Length: 279
Ligand code: HPA
Image (cartoon, rainbow, N blue to C red; front, side, top):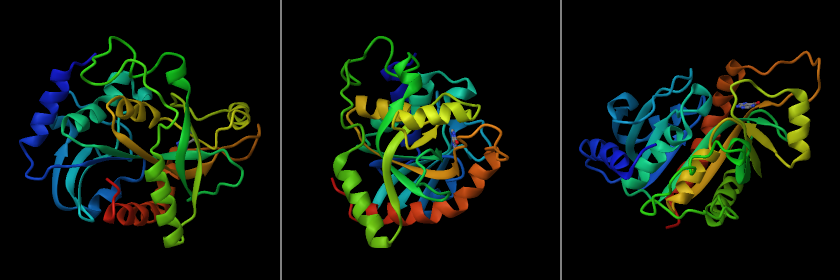
């Protein structure tokens, strides 16, 4: 467990290296870290230099916090995140979001690589999270478990609108203007690290999930607990396999490769969105 003091200590170590005040936190998922190169006047802080911050051990996650300007906003962008399957606790997974809040940020933009469950989704598509199914969270692996620090947020957080409606509407408009297809759907998080079986994919589809991944919902919970606005976008890196004995097999390489198609689309949407960001 962490306390407010831990979040404040990490925030101070970051603030001491900055002249800019970041307003928006961003988490870049597998294969999406290149987006941070769009920032100007960058300060790059390796996770290992921030007390308490969990390093990412996954290939395709560079492990830097990059702070800089993007389209008139000051953003703190995480190139990679910590996952539950790496052996981190949920409070560790949520730690960076708590620190972003301690740094005074009001909004987080979460991105991830996800498998497409909805049959209409193709590799390279983007999906706006309109809602989620948090399977680890529903059965106890939830970053809000344990004693509640009222200074951080309320005990029973409402999640009827986990993902900010106004931000979703803006992202939808921006994508339409740019001619970039953007689905809106339900993201289901699992612990991983194994990919799902075909039977699990069929079950998730029946439950109403459109995409599946191993992150994001835990960060969204910590952000909502702290009263931050959340926008989240999945990049569909592979179509989840729903038939046993298929010749296909999901692998991490295809997840990273799809990033090459997804990053330019995601970058275009996020830049346009930040250019005229609703406050
Ligand atoms: N399943 C779970 N996580 C993922 C997938 C997937 O198919 N693709 C990218 N992350």
